[in-house]
Amino acid sequence: MDFLIISARTSSLFILDLVDGDYDIHPMKLSLRGDYALRALIVLAEHYSQGIVRIQTISERQNIPKRFLEQILNDVKSGGFVESRRGIAGGYQLARSPEEITLAELIRHVEGSLVELPLDTEGSGRRGVKPDEVQLAIRSMMKEVRESILKVLEHITLADLCARAQKLRSENAGLDYVI
Image: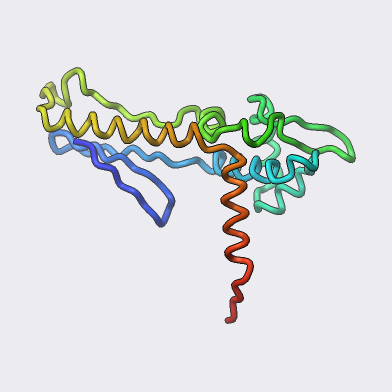
């Protein structure tokens, strides 16, 4: 039996798989590398029309260690997401427009896979016990949930994330914090 658990505190999604008293937890959470890659590419997307962005600028804006950022940007460069220029005026820029880069393809490149969760709807369950109709119904429903998540990620682009970030900035611009 599968259960979907959403943690608002950590922005994570977990699938809890319960069969015959055994629990398996399958997190769907970006690694630090994946999080940094997304944040770096959002900076590049926000500056898309302006051209090259220095790595130092990205590092400072997103508070990403420069050495780690260099590795990440080299990786996404090999995936065709960014281009680089060396030298004093060097830096990075998106290889394609922000409207053409989906979260799904970026996450697949950086993380390897979006959702790798075992679903044994055809064969036997654990310990050789065949799942009953209720377990199969729940599993098929959870498969639909995973497929829905994938569809959403396929349709969200870097441009969409930039628009969301801009909206949040403008909403928070008028707030004053007094301590």
